[in-house]
Image (cartoon, rainbow, N blue to C red; front, side, top):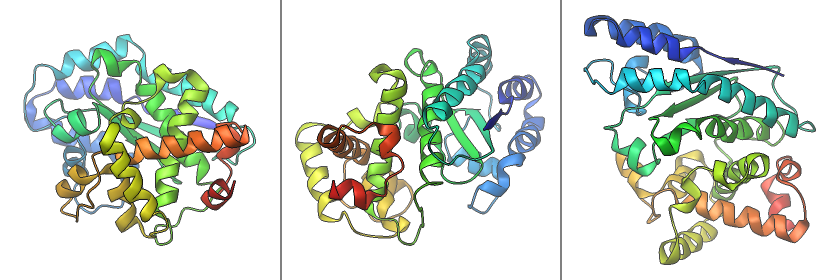
Length: 282
């Protein structure tokens, strides 16, 4: 398969060198290629801001040095190389002919990005786009490419296993996150994993595990995200909290996947092709 990693770093460096009044239009031009893949209505610049992207309507002296640092580190090259490794590792899975990647600088003042998400996150799925946003701290800059791999795993899984927003269950959503993190670990080691699966431990983990397992078969994407992202995200989205600690679905999902891998001796690449019902049954 082929990857098209858009050269957003050059575009963002150019944008940030322009007068403030020109920046929204330049951001809109950069982001427009993936507009059709975004289901939310509204101006794509507003959506970019809401998703934790850097502000194009305010000056911040940290932005341009951050972009230049990522250019020097060849972050986009890292993304493409890691995605190719991931694709090769999933050689038995159906994959798209072409996958496009949009990486954007994050907003270091965005609490959801910096606190709940640990400074970076992505969105994948069954379309032909991957989206990654990050603020490149020392801890984050070397993991941006691995975040793209996490999202690629979702994209590959749901070309082999059905993803239906109406019928997807809490169990499938949680296990999909656990599989994606386990896949990053299988490909590049535990140091490549994101922070999300380690954010909830002890009594908070036990509480989350109990509530997720109690509602494991609850269906509908309007419900499942609450069990993955937790109460902080639900409050931010104006939705009903379910008493789930922030990002707990990642920890519980990885725990369940590790139990499955230990019981079966299968690799994550093999498990990627299995529906959640098969994983639970085994």
